[in-house]
Length: 361
Ligand code: MG
Image (tube, rainbow, N blue to C red; front, side, top):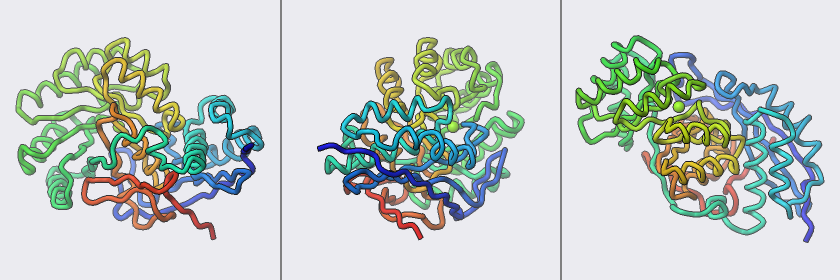
């Protein structure tokens, strides 16, 4: 049976968040992204999504739409889905960079293929577990506000909190982390994300100080600037707390380089950084060979690409940490189906493909 890609459509969406998502750099009240829909010669459809996160990926709403419609689509129309590897290569080599639009199309191709084989996306990718447990990010604010939010999250069923640090004085960071640890007690996991905010020596000092005080930090994400691989290796070598690479790792080559330098203990995979599922899984495979587990995280993305990320996370043994609270932040969803959650526990859909329906107006 010969199967080809017939049509590629894009649909911009804007979805209000339940409450504003605040980081040191920005406050997001409405999330916008682009849904991509592929249709094949059998009339099957596959969905993907790309979120514009210009400060991290360089991708904007306009650049994503242009890359999908004007660059990737013309090369992909007529491509044979009997040769999935070739289809994925066409997406990857259509243009340099542009990881988010590539991710959207790659997710849609995987959704389509899983549907054709009659399995869920997670089964298609490996099918290791049915549920995963996500953390939730404590909203940035005063120590009192952050303690309030942390306590609220625990009553909602979360047992792992992510706290953003690195954008204010280390003293303020320390004060907030201490306050949160004191308020939530010893049984809640606290992971930190410095989002590149520290210098290497400052990072090592802060992390060691927290360990000394018994703040019991589970891991620290991206302590130093993304391109400071030596800094990542320095912090990893000079602390006992596990160090996670996020913004440092976009490509398979980034991962190989940092792992060879012993530059991290964990890698955070994101579909929008890696350019889709297949490249993220290559990074996971390399990490596994180095004995380094992975986390799966996301940008502010809606149900389509967060379900894809969750399905991927559930598919692989080496993906052991989950940061997929994004889809829980939406007031409404532009789609039906996909992952469901009960407190921190996310259940992976068993329907074919992503298990998501998208009705266009
Ligand atoms: Mg991060």
